[in-house]
Image (tube, rainbow, N blue to C red; front, top):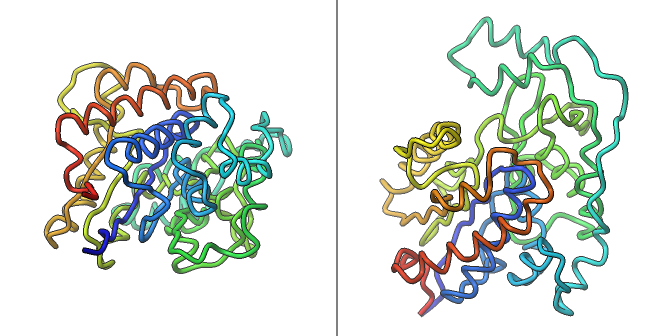
Length: 312
């Protein structure tokens, strides 16, 4: 029997989102023996784009958590990580502007407000960020000379018209530029220029873009969703911010389910949400989030909730 064709969706979520993906990737390998490097297609948005590239570069699952916790990686992992360098504090690339980042997008929204999402308004109206996102993804451009051969889709948004642009599927760029653009949080990081166009974080369109997999022949889709929730009815204040993200994800996944494709969503429960907090760019939370997420995967496996992905 051939192994299942798995689509892997790695959602946005800042630095704690990266740690969440690390724990999920390691936990899935430890509990059910699924190596995320074998995914038939990987969709990465913002924080998920960095994890997607590390997977395609061959980083072993266990080394994702080692990277978050400061433990020494395996010899195989070291070969991947040696070129990355250390995470640096982003530098300012210029003075902060006072004007909106995209008057053109604001004008388009005024003409056709129904065609855009609330996140588009923030991306267009906020002044452009001034921090260099490249400082936060140092070294990713060294992992590949060309785009990975296995399908790897990095989601961004073109700032001046609000369109979702998926590098690796319907647009081309270097790994460094595509990942930088996908991670360029509006109002925080400066937009990334690619071929004369400005791009920002793919989360402006969707934190997951799972709908991209609707026409791909797959046996199961796995979604690592650090900014979603596994309980939309929970009343803690921080969960209220996660509920709209989960609802949009559910709408995207409904198309897959109608086509008969099983879906496995990994989202924070109450205990994990408490570890993550609501400040997704706090680097000191990466280690506890990675460890807690890996423990959560073990709990899900013990409860039989990972059955759609089981390889035995």
